[in-house]
Amino acid sequence: MDDIWKKPAHELARLIRERQLSSREVVGIFLDRIRRLNGPVNAFALIDEEEALRGADTADVELSSGVCRGPLHGLPVHVKDLLSTAGMRTALGSIAFENNIPKHDAGAIARVRDAGGIIIGKTTTPELGHKVLTDSPLHGVTRNPWSLEHSPGGSSGGAAVAVAMGFGPLGVSTDGAGSGRIPAACCGVVGLKPTLGAVPHETSPDLFGSLTCIGSMARDVEDLVMLHNVMAGPDRRDPWSFGGSKMPLRLADDPIAVLRGLRVMWLPRTVNRHLDSDVETHCSHAVSLMAESGAMIVEGPGQFDWALDEALLLMRSYQGTRFKDLLARWRDRMDSTTVASIEDGVKLRAETVRQALFARTELLRRIQALFDHADVIVTPTVSAPALPASQRADEPLTVDGAPVGSLRENWYSYTIPFNPSGNPAISVPCGFAANGIPVGLQVVAPWHEEQRLVAVAAALSHLKPWRHAWPSLAVEAERT
Figure (spheres, rainbow, N blue to C red):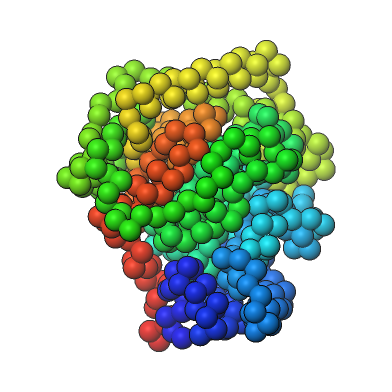
């Protein structure tokens, strides 16, 4: 029983189906860990123990009657606090929404429940998911389990911390500029941003112009595949959800086979001035291992416009239009960087936004052209390991005591372009910096090539294993 929390979700699912474990036992173990260990890291905005245990009991009764609802039957799943959950508060990390209790699940969450998943709670996010650090006026500061003095990144910081701490093996995230991949890298877990619309996001008020995808977070690639398969597929309420493969993702028996002949475009830098030496060492080593296993490393472009400024304009325009009415009542109780983001968006002229949309189209074309010469693009996920928990979103990245520029251009420039372009991307762990904080490697593929991404991720997990590495904070309580 002591090791139940360490087991991957797919193994727990099998044990529950075979009735070697009850869902009540499994869910109870994770709830107990959250109760005892969540305090220092603050991964959860909300836990609904009563409803989770009721759902577990129902799952056990169904199995005793020969009913298995799907691959997630009886498994605990946590959901980022930006996604609607029926009857469970969805506050978006904001005091303005602290009484918001949706009547309906987001479509992806409904699919999780239909497949037997049990929603145990909501994970923390910055206010309105507006930044890549996880703190908010409503829920406070979320901390990295590998070092409490550091941030887990964001905006899916709580989801990454929950997976890293063994609070639940499956987390539903969102990603609008790296919001799933960045915390995955900072916390040493796997984070998938699928192709735009591969997982329906029908609750978005701007379906045709959206930058945000619903993603998956896990420690184990097979677990990630299981959760993604449940959530993915067409939904008539989201036009982007059509056109992709209807085949579920699968992992090969030989994980290394995918690397043989694979053309890998390795980009250690994009527009960033700085790359941490530990990040460069571990990411370069992972690429070298891929080459030794049969991959062909191809040269990237010398000059390339990644359209970071235009992506920011599109995000700010969205935030300003959607949330401007909050300022009249809530300004003084909101994060100052939230307010600044909304105000920046309100000031934008229609022509400026239209030009940014044109630039988004051109970015897509340029990135698609890169895949004429490569099967995947590989970069660091972020240029440096997790930042201090005191870092502000509007402060520059500091290296050796000196500012080197904005976070957008110098820390997470790698993740941003693939949201406006819509390409699927995944962050996988590839080592640890000297201070013990994880390092992540990003792999990007053409549209609807999630199968290639998870195959490469599985190969990397074989070449540089990470699943059995746990933060000391996660295991110390079990030793005492």
